[in-house]
Length: 260
Image 1 (cartoon, helix red, strand yellow):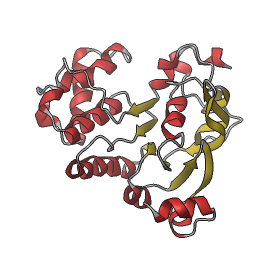
Image 2 (tube, one colour; image 1 turned 60 degrees about the vertical axis):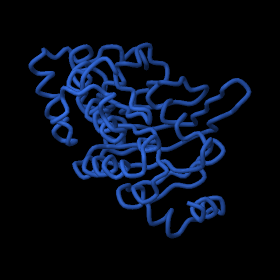
Image 3 (cartoon, one colour; image 1 turned 45 degrees about the vertical axis):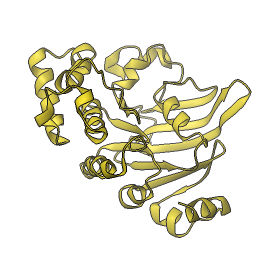
């Protein structure tokens, strides 16, 4: 099935045999690093418009799961379906990343480029937009995250919260169907966390499909519609915020939340 995805025009096409509301489906996913089994038989799916928060203790496999979904890590076993197409063995992962963007905890901005050019690079190099259209797109999303006034600044001149908002704008410039967030506030000072979470909440309200690894329980309760609790490389429990935070069924979930 991977061969069907080689032309970029076919990325994101819906398989009519699949539920069209399901964008990502993870089936029996496993990931080993040598003898260390980090993910064990993971199954879950993401519907269009979902805000899914993956919570759990450090070392539970949350970030590895996210990196597998975007093919930054190659799964050891199982499948990842994007609109019904198996992308696990894709020869050209960047084609998937046009549709499934990622925001990293360490920002990953290019320090030699200013804010505007950081946001224009992907649309120009990958989407092949001309300079004027790439700049228009970049300004649109920088405006949306409150960073339009900083277009000429280099990353070193920005606070951590500002860098993360630029990183979010940069990801949005690729017009993704799904945006993955890998602990986007973990590298921030406490007073900067709020501005990034506010930006993410706005994106959720606009209907963007989001998959968020986070330790911010308040954000997960208030913004997500789907919570996945992981521990020891497995999904221990999942459900709505009310189910997980108010009526957890598993003792391990209760123990974790009592300390959060």
